[in-house]
Amino acid sequence: MMHLFLVENRAELERRCREKVAMRSMRLPSEHQLQHGVPIFLDQLIRTLKAEDAGKMALSLAISGPADGSAHGTSELADSATTHGGQLLALGYSISQVVHGYGDLCQAVSDLAVVMDEQFAVEEFRTLNRCLDNGIAEAVSEFTQRRDVLIANEQALALSQRIGYFAHELRNQLGTASLAVSALKQGGMGLAGATGAVLDRSLVSLRTLIDRSLAEVRVEAGLTLQRSVFSLNNFITEVSYSASLEADLLRCTLVVEEVAPLLQLHADQDLLLSAVGNLLQNAFKFGALNGTVVLRAYASGGRLKIEVEDNGAGLPPEAADDMFLPFTQAGANKTGLGLGLSIARRSVEANGGNLSVESVVGHGCVFIIDLPRHVDSAATFAA
Image (cartoon, rainbow, N blue to C red; front, side, top):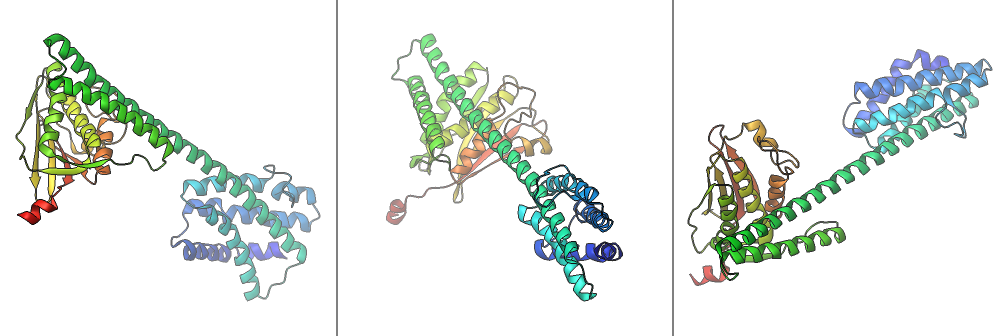
Protein backbone atom coordinates (compact mmCIF):
# COMPACT_ATOMS: atom_id res chain seq x y z
CA MET A 1 0.00 0.00 0.00
CA MET A 2 1.17 3.51 -0.82
CA HIS A 3 1.04 4.88 2.75
CA LEU A 4 3.39 2.10 3.95
CA PHE A 5 5.73 2.78 1.04
CA LEU A 6 5.81 6.50 1.91
CA VAL A 7 6.52 5.83 5.59
CA GLU A 8 9.30 3.33 4.91
CA ASN A 9 11.01 5.48 2.23
CA ARG A 10 10.35 8.94 3.59
CA ALA A 11 14.00 9.94 4.03
CA GLU A 12 14.87 8.86 0.50
CA LEU A 13 11.91 10.73 -0.97
CA GLU A 14 12.91 13.95 0.82
CA ARG A 15 16.50 13.52 -0.39
CA ARG A 16 15.33 13.14 -3.99
CA CYS A 17 13.16 16.26 -3.69
CA ARG A 18 16.11 18.29 -2.43
CA GLU A 19 18.23 17.09 -5.35
CA LYS A 20 15.57 18.08 -7.87
CA VAL A 21 15.31 21.58 -6.41
CA ALA A 22 19.10 21.97 -6.45
CA MET A 23 19.33 20.82 -10.08
CA ARG A 24 16.60 23.19 -11.20
CA SER A 25 17.39 26.36 -9.26
CA MET A 26 21.16 25.96 -8.78
CA ARG A 27 20.73 26.31 -5.04
CA LEU A 28 19.79 24.02 -2.19
CA PRO A 29 16.38 24.45 -0.59
CA SER A 30 16.51 26.28 2.70
CA GLU A 31 15.78 24.54 5.97
CA HIS A 32 12.69 26.72 6.24
CA GLN A 33 11.38 25.40 2.94
CA LEU A 34 12.23 21.83 3.89
CA GLN A 35 10.41 21.96 7.22
CA HIS A 36 7.23 23.62 5.92
CA GLY A 37 6.96 21.99 2.49
CA VAL A 38 7.53 18.32 1.66
CA PRO A 39 7.55 16.93 5.26
CA ILE A 40 4.15 18.36 6.21
CA PHE A 41 2.66 17.42 2.85
CA LEU A 42 3.96 13.86 3.23
CA ASP A 43 2.40 13.62 6.70
CA GLN A 44 -0.95 14.75 5.36
CA LEU A 45 -0.76 12.48 2.33
CA ILE A 46 0.06 9.45 4.50
CA ARG A 47 -2.79 10.21 6.91
CA THR A 48 -5.19 10.73 4.00
CA LEU A 49 -4.24 7.37 2.47
CA LYS A 50 -4.59 5.62 5.83
CA ALA A 51 -8.05 7.14 6.38
CA GLU A 52 -9.25 6.04 2.96
CA ASP A 53 -7.80 2.55 3.45
CA ALA A 54 -9.83 2.33 6.67
CA GLY A 55 -12.97 3.59 4.92
CA LYS A 56 -12.99 6.91 6.82
CA MET A 57 -13.75 9.21 3.87
CA ALA A 58 -14.93 12.13 6.02
CA LEU A 59 -11.58 12.15 7.83
CA SER A 60 -9.75 11.91 4.50
CA LEU A 61 -11.55 14.98 3.15
CA ALA A 62 -10.98 16.91 6.38
CA ILE A 63 -7.25 16.34 6.00
CA SER A 64 -6.78 16.95 2.28
CA GLY A 65 -10.03 18.39 0.88
CA PRO A 66 -12.24 17.23 -2.01
CA ALA A 67 -11.02 16.80 -5.58
CA ASP A 68 -13.11 19.66 -7.02
CA GLY A 69 -11.56 22.28 -4.74
CA SER A 70 -14.99 23.32 -3.47
CA ALA A 71 -13.81 23.37 0.16
CA HIS A 72 -11.16 26.03 -0.47
CA GLY A 73 -9.20 26.81 2.70
CA THR A 74 -11.12 24.40 4.95
CA SER A 75 -8.73 21.42 5.14
CA GLU A 76 -5.48 20.80 6.99
CA LEU A 77 -3.64 20.54 3.69
CA ALA A 78 -5.09 23.86 2.52
CA ASP A 79 -3.90 25.60 5.68
CA SER A 80 -0.35 24.28 5.45
CA ALA A 81 -0.12 24.89 1.67
CA THR A 82 -1.28 28.48 2.19
CA THR A 83 1.46 29.00 4.79
CA HIS A 84 3.98 27.33 2.49
CA GLY A 85 3.10 29.57 -0.46
CA GLY A 86 3.57 32.71 1.64
CA GLN A 87 6.89 31.45 2.99
CA LEU A 88 8.23 30.66 -0.49
CA LEU A 89 7.45 34.22 -1.59
CA ALA A 90 9.32 35.57 1.45
CA LEU A 91 12.28 33.33 0.58
CA GLY A 92 12.46 34.78 -2.92
CA TYR A 93 11.13 31.82 -4.90
CA SER A 94 9.12 32.19 -8.12
CA ILE A 95 5.62 30.88 -8.77
CA SER A 96 7.16 28.30 -11.11
CA GLN A 97 9.26 26.96 -8.25
CA VAL A 98 6.15 26.71 -6.07
CA VAL A 99 4.47 24.46 -8.64
CA HIS A 100 7.59 22.41 -9.36
CA GLY A 101 8.12 21.81 -5.64
CA TYR A 102 4.95 19.74 -5.45
CA GLY A 103 5.68 18.06 -8.77
CA ASP A 104 9.08 16.99 -7.44
CA LEU A 105 7.42 14.82 -4.80
CA CYS A 106 5.11 13.18 -7.32
CA GLN A 107 8.06 12.37 -9.58
CA ALA A 108 10.16 11.16 -6.65
CA VAL A 109 7.39 8.76 -5.58
CA SER A 110 6.94 7.45 -9.14
CA ASP A 111 10.66 7.04 -9.80
CA LEU A 112 11.36 5.25 -6.52
CA ALA A 113 8.34 2.98 -7.01
CA VAL A 114 9.74 1.92 -10.41
CA VAL A 115 13.19 1.26 -8.93
CA MET A 116 11.72 -0.84 -6.12
CA ASP A 117 9.14 -2.50 -8.41
CA GLU A 118 6.34 -1.27 -6.15
CA GLN A 119 2.75 -1.44 -7.41
CA PHE A 120 0.01 0.95 -6.28
CA ALA A 121 -3.72 0.82 -6.73
CA VAL A 122 -5.37 3.27 -9.12
CA GLU A 123 -7.36 4.81 -6.26
CA GLU A 124 -4.13 5.53 -4.39
CA PHE A 125 -2.75 7.44 -7.37
CA ARG A 126 -6.00 9.39 -7.57
CA THR A 127 -5.62 10.34 -3.93
CA LEU A 128 -2.02 11.39 -4.52
CA ASN A 129 -3.06 13.55 -7.47
CA ARG A 130 -5.93 15.08 -5.48
CA CYS A 131 -3.60 16.06 -2.66
CA LEU A 132 -1.08 17.51 -5.10
CA ASP A 133 -3.76 19.50 -6.96
CA ASN A 134 -5.16 20.94 -3.74
CA GLY A 135 -1.70 21.74 -2.38
CA ILE A 136 -0.61 23.48 -5.57
CA ALA A 137 -3.87 25.44 -5.85
CA GLU A 138 -3.71 26.73 -2.26
CA ALA A 139 0.03 27.53 -2.34
CA VAL A 140 -0.17 29.33 -5.69
CA SER A 141 -3.26 31.28 -4.61
CA GLU A 142 -1.57 32.55 -1.45
CA PHE A 143 1.71 33.21 -3.26
CA THR A 144 -0.07 35.27 -5.93
CA GLN A 145 -2.18 37.25 -3.48
CA ARG A 146 0.80 38.18 -1.31
CA ARG A 147 2.93 39.02 -4.34
CA ASP A 148 0.20 41.33 -5.66
CA VAL A 149 0.07 43.09 -2.29
CA LEU A 150 3.85 43.55 -2.31
CA ILE A 151 3.79 44.93 -5.85
CA ALA A 152 0.98 47.33 -4.96
CA ASN A 153 2.90 48.53 -1.88
CA GLU A 154 6.07 49.06 -3.92
CA GLN A 155 4.16 51.03 -6.53
CA ALA A 156 2.53 53.16 -3.83
CA LEU A 157 5.93 53.88 -2.27
CA ALA A 158 7.42 54.79 -5.66
CA LEU A 159 4.50 57.13 -6.33
CA SER A 160 4.87 58.74 -2.91
CA GLN A 161 8.57 59.36 -3.52
CA ARG A 162 7.91 60.87 -6.94
CA ILE A 163 5.29 63.18 -5.44
CA GLY A 164 7.80 64.04 -2.73
CA TYR A 165 10.47 64.87 -5.32
CA PHE A 166 8.03 67.06 -7.18
CA ALA A 167 6.90 68.94 -4.05
CA HIS A 168 10.49 69.37 -2.87
CA GLU A 169 11.64 70.87 -6.16
CA LEU A 170 8.59 73.12 -6.34
CA ARG A 171 9.36 74.42 -2.88
CA ASN A 172 13.03 75.03 -3.76
CA GLN A 173 12.26 77.01 -6.90
CA LEU A 174 9.47 78.95 -5.22
CA GLY A 175 11.81 79.73 -2.31
CA THR A 176 14.46 81.10 -4.68
CA ALA A 177 11.87 83.23 -6.47
CA SER A 178 10.62 84.59 -3.14
CA LEU A 179 14.16 85.49 -2.08
CA ALA A 180 14.72 87.30 -5.35
CA VAL A 181 11.49 89.29 -4.97
CA SER A 182 12.44 90.20 -1.39
CA ALA A 183 15.88 91.37 -2.52
CA LEU A 184 14.34 93.47 -5.30
CA LYS A 185 11.97 95.13 -2.85
CA GLN A 186 14.60 95.85 -0.21
CA GLY A 187 17.32 97.03 -2.57
CA GLY A 188 15.20 98.96 -5.01
CA MET A 189 16.86 97.06 -7.86
CA GLY A 190 15.41 96.75 -11.34
CA LEU A 191 14.38 93.52 -12.97
CA ALA A 192 17.10 93.82 -15.59
CA GLY A 193 19.92 93.00 -13.13
CA ALA A 194 21.34 89.73 -11.81
CA THR A 195 18.63 89.38 -9.15
CA GLY A 196 15.95 89.78 -11.78
CA ALA A 197 17.66 87.05 -13.79
CA VAL A 198 17.49 84.75 -10.76
CA LEU A 199 13.77 85.42 -10.46
CA ASP A 200 13.24 84.80 -14.14
CA ARG A 201 15.26 81.60 -14.02
CA SER A 202 13.28 80.32 -11.03
CA LEU A 203 9.98 80.94 -12.78
CA VAL A 204 11.22 79.20 -15.91
CA SER A 205 12.42 76.28 -13.79
CA LEU A 206 9.00 76.06 -12.13
CA ARG A 207 7.36 75.84 -15.54
CA THR A 208 9.90 73.25 -16.73
CA LEU A 209 9.41 71.17 -13.58
CA ILE A 210 5.65 71.11 -14.05
CA ASP A 211 6.02 70.25 -17.74
CA ARG A 212 8.38 67.41 -16.94
CA SER A 213 6.16 66.06 -14.19
CA LEU A 214 3.24 65.93 -16.60
CA ALA A 215 5.47 64.21 -19.15
CA GLU A 216 6.50 61.65 -16.52
CA VAL A 217 2.86 60.72 -16.04
CA ARG A 218 2.56 60.10 -19.79
CA VAL A 219 5.91 58.40 -20.24
CA GLU A 220 6.55 55.60 -17.75
CA ALA A 221 10.27 55.67 -18.48
CA GLY A 222 10.56 59.02 -16.67
CA LEU A 223 12.08 62.32 -17.70
CA THR A 224 13.48 62.89 -21.17
CA LEU A 225 16.82 64.68 -21.04
CA GLN A 226 17.10 68.04 -22.80
CA ARG A 227 20.83 68.07 -23.45
CA SER A 228 22.76 71.07 -24.68
CA VAL A 229 26.34 72.28 -24.71
CA PHE A 230 27.02 75.08 -22.24
CA SER A 231 29.90 76.78 -20.49
CA LEU A 232 30.83 75.44 -17.07
CA ASN A 233 31.93 78.95 -16.03
CA ASN A 234 28.55 80.47 -16.99
CA PHE A 235 26.76 77.60 -15.27
CA ILE A 236 28.62 78.15 -11.98
CA THR A 237 28.01 81.90 -12.23
CA GLU A 238 24.28 81.33 -12.66
CA VAL A 239 24.17 78.90 -9.73
CA SER A 240 26.04 81.34 -7.52
CA TYR A 241 23.48 84.12 -8.11
CA SER A 242 20.63 82.25 -6.43
CA ALA A 243 22.91 80.58 -3.86
CA SER A 244 24.26 83.94 -2.69
CA LEU A 245 20.74 85.10 -1.86
CA GLU A 246 20.18 82.11 0.41
CA ALA A 247 23.67 82.47 1.92
CA ASP A 248 22.91 86.08 2.86
CA LEU A 249 19.58 85.10 4.38
CA LEU A 250 21.22 82.38 6.52
CA ARG A 251 24.22 84.56 7.39
CA CYS A 252 26.65 82.21 5.64
CA THR A 253 29.60 83.07 3.43
CA LEU A 254 29.61 81.67 -0.09
CA VAL A 255 33.00 81.48 -1.79
CA VAL A 256 32.92 80.76 -5.53
CA GLU A 257 36.33 79.83 -6.93
CA GLU A 258 37.36 80.91 -10.41
CA VAL A 259 36.51 78.50 -13.23
CA ALA A 260 38.58 78.04 -16.40
CA PRO A 261 36.63 79.82 -19.18
CA LEU A 262 36.83 77.15 -21.92
CA LEU A 263 35.41 74.17 -20.02
CA GLN A 264 32.13 72.86 -21.44
CA LEU A 265 29.43 70.38 -20.51
CA HIS A 266 26.97 68.45 -22.67
CA ALA A 267 24.12 67.79 -20.30
CA ASP A 268 20.64 68.72 -19.17
CA GLN A 269 21.30 72.11 -17.61
CA ASP A 270 18.06 72.23 -15.62
CA LEU A 271 18.76 68.90 -13.93
CA LEU A 272 22.30 69.96 -13.05
CA LEU A 273 21.08 73.29 -11.69
CA SER A 274 18.72 71.29 -9.49
CA ALA A 275 21.53 69.01 -8.32
CA VAL A 276 24.02 71.75 -7.47
CA GLY A 277 21.29 73.89 -5.94
CA ASN A 278 20.28 71.05 -3.64
CA LEU A 279 23.89 70.48 -2.60
CA LEU A 280 24.34 74.17 -1.78
CA GLN A 281 21.10 74.26 0.20
CA ASN A 282 22.28 71.18 2.10
CA ALA A 283 25.62 72.86 2.83
CA PHE A 284 23.97 76.05 4.11
CA LYS A 285 21.58 73.98 6.23
CA PHE A 286 24.07 71.59 7.84
CA GLY A 287 27.28 73.62 7.74
CA ALA A 288 28.70 75.53 10.67
CA LEU A 289 26.71 78.42 12.14
CA ASN A 290 27.68 81.54 10.18
CA GLY A 291 30.04 79.22 8.33
CA THR A 292 31.62 79.19 4.89
CA VAL A 293 30.52 77.20 1.86
CA VAL A 294 32.86 76.83 -1.11
CA LEU A 295 31.70 76.16 -4.67
CA ARG A 296 34.38 75.11 -7.16
CA ALA A 297 34.50 73.48 -10.60
CA TYR A 298 37.52 72.22 -12.52
CA ALA A 299 38.74 69.72 -15.09
CA SER A 300 40.34 66.42 -14.12
CA GLY A 301 41.50 64.56 -17.21
CA GLY A 302 38.48 63.78 -19.35
CA ARG A 303 36.09 64.59 -16.49
CA LEU A 304 34.69 67.72 -14.91
CA LYS A 305 34.27 68.04 -11.16
CA ILE A 306 31.86 70.32 -9.33
CA GLU A 307 32.42 70.43 -5.58
CA VAL A 308 30.39 71.92 -2.73
CA GLU A 309 32.33 72.09 0.53
CA ASP A 310 31.15 73.15 3.97
CA ASN A 311 32.96 73.56 7.28
CA GLY A 312 30.35 71.87 9.42
CA ALA A 313 30.63 68.98 11.86
CA GLY A 314 31.06 66.33 9.17
CA LEU A 315 29.61 62.83 9.23
CA PRO A 316 30.85 59.36 10.19
CA PRO A 317 31.23 56.83 7.32
CA GLU A 318 28.07 54.92 8.18
CA ALA A 319 25.96 58.09 7.97
CA ALA A 320 27.61 59.11 4.68
CA ASP A 321 26.57 55.78 3.13
CA ASP A 322 22.87 56.35 3.88
CA MET A 323 22.50 60.08 3.32
CA PHE A 324 21.56 59.74 -0.37
CA LEU A 325 18.52 57.57 0.46
CA PRO A 326 15.12 59.26 0.05
CA PHE A 327 13.55 60.77 3.19
CA THR A 328 16.82 60.44 5.14
CA GLN A 329 18.11 63.27 7.33
CA ALA A 330 21.48 62.68 8.96
CA GLY A 331 21.99 66.04 10.64
CA ALA A 332 20.40 67.72 13.64
CA ASN A 333 18.32 70.04 11.45
CA LYS A 334 15.18 68.05 10.55
CA THR A 335 13.38 70.70 8.48
CA GLY A 336 12.45 69.63 4.98
CA LEU A 337 11.68 66.19 3.61
CA GLY A 338 15.16 64.66 3.41
CA LEU A 339 14.90 64.45 -0.38
CA GLY A 340 17.51 66.97 -1.55
CA LEU A 341 20.52 64.66 -1.78
CA SER A 342 18.48 61.87 -3.32
CA ILE A 343 17.20 64.27 -5.99
CA ALA A 344 20.72 65.54 -6.59
CA ARG A 345 22.09 62.03 -7.13
CA ARG A 346 19.29 61.12 -9.54
CA SER A 347 19.84 64.31 -11.52
CA VAL A 348 23.59 63.75 -11.78
CA GLU A 349 23.26 60.08 -12.71
CA ALA A 350 20.69 60.93 -15.39
CA ASN A 351 23.45 62.99 -17.03
CA GLY A 352 25.94 60.12 -17.00
CA GLY A 353 27.79 61.30 -13.90
CA ASN A 354 28.06 60.29 -10.28
CA LEU A 355 27.71 62.04 -6.96
CA SER A 356 29.84 61.16 -3.95
CA VAL A 357 30.75 62.65 -0.59
CA GLU A 358 33.97 62.89 1.36
CA SER A 359 33.55 63.65 5.03
CA VAL A 360 35.65 63.63 8.17
CA VAL A 361 34.00 64.14 11.54
CA GLY A 362 34.83 67.66 12.71
CA HIS A 363 36.02 68.84 9.28
CA GLY A 364 32.85 69.21 7.23
CA CYS A 365 31.73 67.54 4.00
CA VAL A 366 32.72 67.82 0.36
CA PHE A 367 30.10 66.72 -2.19
CA ILE A 368 31.63 65.91 -5.57
CA ILE A 369 29.77 65.78 -8.88
CA ASP A 370 31.81 63.92 -11.51
CA LEU A 371 30.68 64.39 -15.13
CA PRO A 372 32.07 63.68 -18.61
CA ARG A 373 33.89 66.65 -20.08
CA HIS A 374 32.60 67.90 -23.43
CA VAL A 375 35.26 68.53 -26.03
CA ASP A 376 34.40 70.65 -29.07
CA SER A 377 35.49 68.42 -31.95
CA ALA A 378 35.71 71.33 -34.40
CA ALA A 379 37.96 73.28 -32.03
CA THR A 380 40.11 70.23 -31.42
CA PHE A 381 40.51 69.63 -35.16
CA ALA A 382 41.43 73.26 -35.76
CA ALA A 383 44.04 73.19 -33.02
